[in-house]
Length: 539
Image (cartoon, rainbow, N blue to C red; front, side, top):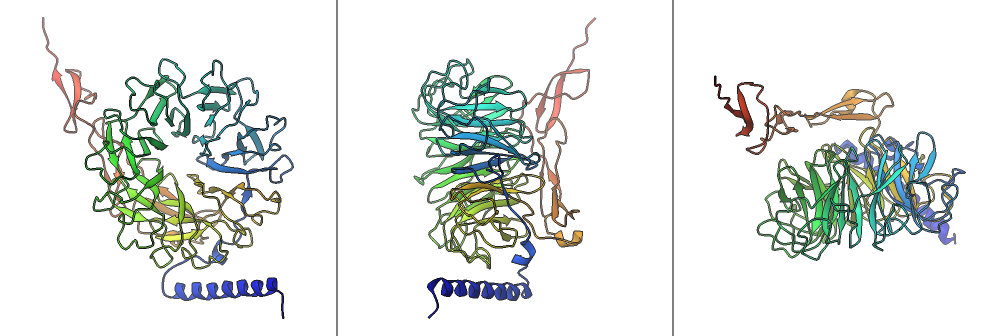
């Protein structure tokens, strides 16, 4: 009788062969599912590497990525990623993939290492579009002067300037009297959103629960966004759009929008320009989710919001009773489920926190499901990429041979770059790169996420708001159409994927504008037109 290991090996090979046959059969019936052959050769890159290029000597996780994918931020308990790491505490690092260098950013302005741990919350650090600005939380007391509150604060590190500043302070510069964590950055690094239990960051904060705050680093101001109504429940997990206008977050409050009676955590979006709050964890028909929705991600323009939810009423025929990943389009009001089987039905496993690319077209997430793609046979949580336009799902965590990861992707949100499209993620696998021998979680980045192409036609889809072409590297490149403001009284537009046409929302009446008429004054937007009163000519 053969060994158990031998029988298991033959069984796995059998399943692989069956999966390949099924993939071919489905492709013949027009599903267009990607196969291992299409995606093989996508060698992941070890990001949490030490100076010798090997995996660090302890766990690393929770990556964020710059717009072009060059810089990856993450936290780590390893002590061998940089020289002189002797604080025996968790630190935050940035990896420059172009130069193959790692920098510790949870340091003081003089470069001194933190005297206590950073990202003890386990949340992600944040990085802006060009990779220069990094935000993180830390209980260290020596990163800035006069840090005497004894709680976690949110800090910002300006890498090029070698400067560290504290963001979780009031407009008057008062340090928070409660812990602040979970930072998010806009594209420029000007705006820092974070959650805090402090009651002294803004006036009239009397609800005694955690709130969402936004720090304007240029003006030195701190606000509680959409603060006309003080939440009657705690809020957390902020995400912010590229321009800092839209902030997505989770709240248990029931008084932010009318008719919030589900008794569950909901996902909201605050429009900081208008003060309008919107509950987005709802179905396409407007029904609020009947269970908790958490961990939002938001597209660069603030239109698309992804989140995970246990709700069963956000889409029709959700009968699996499991946490799924959903995506809500704020422009159309439509909600779709991203964590679906390769036949478009219920997944058979729990799905993890999502990440969106800048356009909102692609959503990445981990999942315990085994039926999201045909060839998922490793029986551990894997990482997936869903194309919301083509309605295709791709398995990401493979090695250069196309083999699946041999251990789980972590239940931590991945990160997606803008252009090129890359995915950073945390995994316990040891077979993604030859240099991983530490038996701890590591941070990787995967390139070439989409199937290969030979002509532009191979990348064609039905979204008229994207231009598709086959790149020089044989990978599809998607460029999203931008809709500039029509004039001073209209916002940046939203492109309709069905028509390719832009619609430009009207700015609120009373917004300052300039009608270029020297004979008018006090110009204001009224019903989308810039009008002013006539200048009185005397003498």
